[in-house]
Image 1 (cartoon, rainbow, N blue to C red):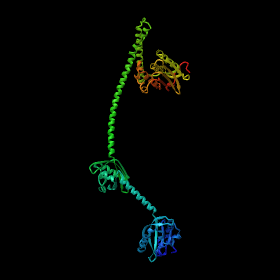
Image 2 (cartoon, helix red, strand yellow):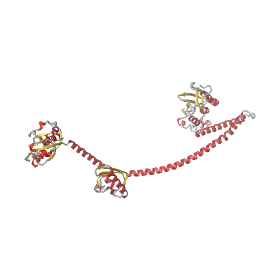
Image 3 (cartoon, rainbow, N blue to C red):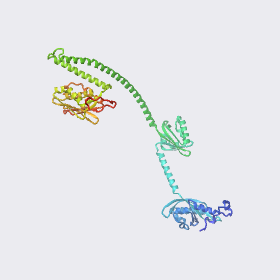
Image 4 (cartoon, one colour):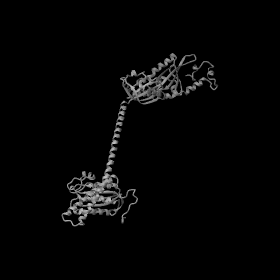
Length: 545
């Protein structure tokens, strides 16, 4: 084994060679420089005799094998080679020794810990001063990272090819001159041309004449910026037809670009149909709007005519009716002389019919005012017990005539409510009149008032005929009466409950109904206890707390 590195037989024979190569006096000799390179190399390096015995190795080779230096020097290098690569290695080294030419081969290096490391070995001959090959110098490079990178690159290429082949969108790969160098199956479907005819054909030849300029501009953008996009571009088909596509272009590498064309023919047709439908709908909406405007104008005219009619009816009907009622009362009281027994019932009927007609006119006028938003409420603090007693007094003659008992219950803690006194009394009287009207002789009807939270409750209860669930949904409609034999025995226009509900809603309240046929009914008016926010000052009745 040589005592120095490099062996003297491998050094230049010219004594002045060192000075010529290294004029710097800090360099004493070329061997020192070679030793530094040998020790600092990141690849494993070893020197072996012609017989394959390792004579010298650097630290990188020691680390690569996982052995100590003394376990390597003086041992054959082929013991570090896995069995399947031994013959290949011996042949490569033998060729170097016989031809004097360097060689390179791949093998697996076997470590003592059982791991196999893929390496690439570069072998060169080592000569003595006379030029005789005395051994070999081998550089061993770990190729694990290279192989993994190559494997990853191969897998990436395979994935790209799979995506390229299976992509439903047409893909053309073009060179700088615009020639197609690759096309996927979707591209052949899009154009109707086989792949062989697409290759080396200019992409611009696949578009209609009207698209050539746009396609050329897109190609310029693609080469300049590396990307392009056209929301709509047409391609020609071999059968003479055209396909509307959405085009995306991206750079694949130097002088290589990918053009993806997505068939959007169906989408464009659908959008065209939607646009046509939208225009048709807009026309219909405009026509319907005109019809509604005309209808609204007609309704406004009808409403105006109705208001004029109601105003005329208020004056033309109520004025003579009041005269008839006044004269009837005067005749019955004998102001113009006593009436005989045959005349009194006739005059009484005239008076009662006049009162009924006046009530009907008043109800119609009230409903019309509410619908027109012209009925204003006069909010004030009202005594709960007084308004209930007054309402009962107004219906008591009818109740006495039918032998129906009346009653009233009020919560002592609930003494005042803020509402329109006249309209609240109107609601209570309407409900109490219905209770007496639809309760058989011997029954009872009454009013109860209480408060809970911010709400006031006025409930009218009777033991009358009751109402079915189906009829409850109808009773608040104007001019509606439940169909029962007892109901038809009494007069009524069907406006009372409709007016009660409208007046309650005008107070920001409601009317609840609880009824069952044969077991009576319970109508409850629910109103806010306090005045609306805009009413800051409400008159208080005398004596109220």
